[in-house]
Image (cartoon, rainbow, N blue to C red; front, side, top):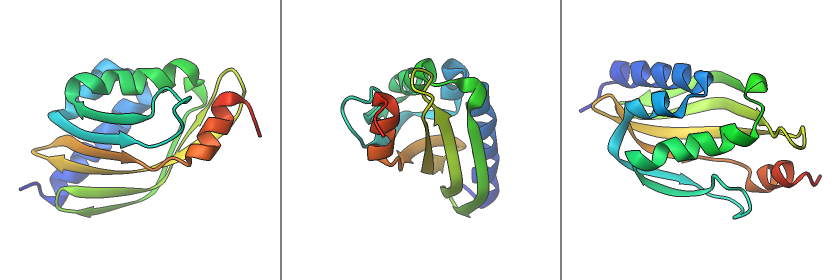
Length: 136
């Protein structure tokens, strides 16, 4: 059973690694089996389900390859933790390099044995598709 303190440590490490925009480094804190899902428009290449650690680097490298990582803002206003579950209140804001349009994403995750095993990205798929395609 993962404690609140262990979940907070894992979340802090995840935030640190995400700010470095290095998918191979980020994936190290994910479990072998991952229940990950990013719902959204199919024209946005990082949407869809992930079920294993091997799929995690592509998930992160895909948006980072089209986003201006120098203008990434991971603003966390509050973290709610209950054992292995955590919800981040705030937003991960990205800018699509080709369009200059920004979008923000809230997230929820589950930590098991200090590894992220469940990740849900709650993107506004309409806003992301608009930013990605360059349409208002």
